[in-house]
Length: 239
Image (cartoon, rainbow, N blue to C red; front, side, top):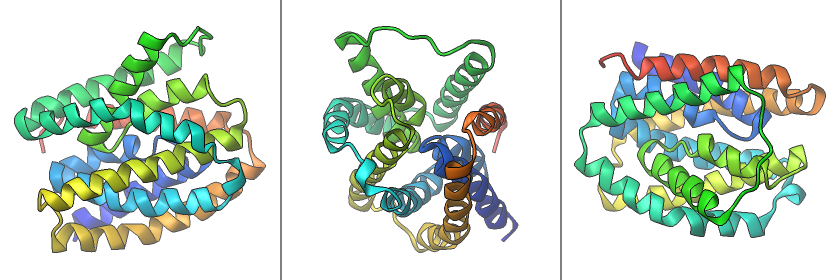
């Protein structure tokens, strides 16, 4: 029960950040959750919780959703999603976790020491970013690290950014859930834990939405980056 309690606490913190920014929730939560309950259960639980929490956040501001960009993003990510599923079932779990941790650490360190760069999003760069997002989502339900690069050059409005990102996350998680059902990865344990985690996650969304309206996102981006760094380091510890 102690492990499950820690998972609830982890998702509360992660979804608080996710409600403020529209991304980074699973990216923050998954590394430690994988170490606590295993890769498959963590993936299934994050998928179910992600569908519910993303839908709730999106419902708070439906007018800000950019449906055209959602459809475009899903189509661009499909090749990466399929390749990521192949890796999930054919590559060593610890190796994938080390690669995941390395990517998270690179992103965190870059965010700490460099300012966002404005550069042209060429078609090859868009395809590379979205393929990476698809791979990360099918492996770790965490495409946000790549998606935010694309989104920052696509959305100028803070609310549109958040609303579109969470709806995209919900749709991707629904696709992933169908795959998990076909693969018979849904169990009584991970379904029950998902239900338990939804409760603190909804509370986090309520608090995060209030903070999103009242405060600048700069401090929360800093906090998210600190948590990102910790999450990346956790990947290198043996479960």
